[in-house]
Amino acid sequence: MPHYSFSNTQVLVLAAGKGTRMRSAKPKVLHELLGKSMLEHVLISLEALNVGGIAIVTGHGSKQVQDTMNAQHDVSWVLQAEQLGTGHAVQQCKDVCADAEHVLIVCGDTPLLQTNTLAKMLTEHVHSSSDISLLSAFQENPYGYGRIVRDQQGNMLKVVEERDANDHIQAIQEVSSGIFCVRQSVLFELLKEVDNDNEQAEYYLPSILPLAVQKAYSVQSCLMRDANEMLGINDRTQLRNAAKVLQNRVILDWEKQGVTIEQPETVRIDVSVHIGTDTLIRAGTQLLGHTHVGDACDIGPYAVINSAWVDDDVMIDAFSHVDHAHISMHGKVGPYARLRPEAYLDEGVKIGNFVEIKKAVIGKGSKVNHLSYIGDTQMGQDCNIGAGSITCNYDGANKHKTIIGDHVFVGSGTRLIAPVEVNDGATLGAGSIITRDVNPDGLTLSVRSEQRYVKHWQRPEKK
Ligand code: UD1
Ligand code: CA
Image 1 (spheres, rainbow, N blue to C red):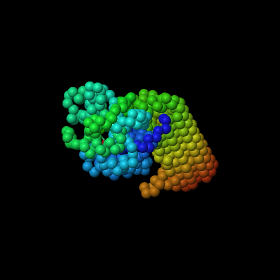
Image 2 (image 1 turned 90 degrees about the vertical axis):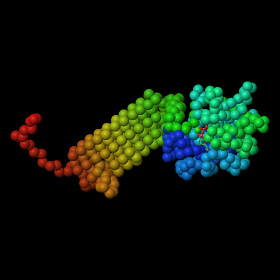
Image 3 (image 1 turned 135 degrees about the vertical axis):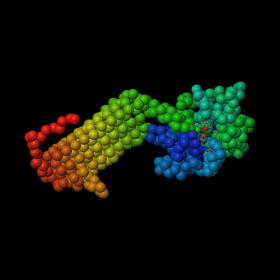
Image 4 (image 1 turned 180 degrees about the vertical axis):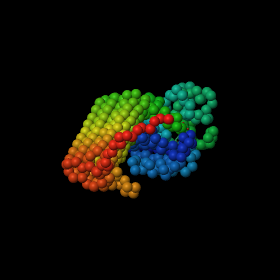
């Protein structure tokens, strides 16, 4: 992406609306697509423009919105206590716009917008010395959007909202994205004259258009190449559709970078995920949050990986669940494995079916292949943990640590009652209950109960 700079432009993001149609306790702009809120998607595309400043207008749930955004983004906040319309929202921003020459207004509910599209609009706005530029698009189904009405010469006259449109206007497929770039002085002059004479009795931002035409200000539209970018989200169906468009964009991007994705319509890949070249993502897999997957990995089918680090040449087999864990090079995990937070697998570790690892380091080349629970454990290199062995780390009140050295062989069905330490080279007999520290090398086993033989016993017969 080229480097942009629009330092004489102030951006306003309108995000005060309740989002009634979402039917949610959460403010609309905090609803997520592929791991990021709508508002964050919008902010990320705006930040790359390097504008003079970004202000967000909030109202409904303003505290919640500010709390979620503040840490990551350098923005200012404007409160619109009562939501009297998009024009009214912009009016509240007069002070933050005072030093800017142009004001770019975007809605917080159009998360698919891309930096390049906005940059093209701003560049055209400046080069043509326009007073008002409106980003427009052709929508096959224009329902819900403001329609652009032109005169016979094709000059833009006004935008008519869905609710205010007659049949003739409803048939117009050229729609407003809601995104305007306006000369600052003109914007606030015109807003003073906007009325609320419409079906919703709101002060509409698009109402500045006919006023500008009357006063012979120059007004132009800038057509979007990809009409999908302006998809506005007002309800959960639109949220799903936008997420689908975004997912397709993300998948195409990774394909270009050498990743193979099988049955992509079944896969979810969040926007902050990284995937290395020659990696294969199989059907039904979900790569979530800040997951990093290295080169030449084989993931899935149906693996769920959340904010985990997966190094190069790792195989994560079917139905495995990996959450905030680390898998080093040449690791093999699953099928049906569960790595919980702070599981750290060193190089070449093998974790097999129905094994759960939590807050534990598994040393280089060690294997935990079947039906085990390893928690709060520090394990050395080249250990072999037999089927069904578990660390008993929790006494009902506190968690205790298990320490296992290098080259330890744990027989099947062993219970390690923590806190306990097993020294290098030890072998633990199958079925042992280990309650005290174990010497290096040799065989350690707990005393087994005597085995009896009952010769004349007979199986009960079926009735
Ligand atoms: C708006 C536009 C419409 C455009 C469409 C594109 C208006 C009147 N309509 O319609 O022309 O085609 O977007 O998606 O501008 N908001 C506030 N304060 C308010 C009212 C709204 O901050 O008082 C915010 C909302 O939170 C939202 C944005 O403005 O993020 C747009 O409002 P919304 O009610 O979604 O407008 P639409 O009906 O989608
Ligand atoms: Ca909207």
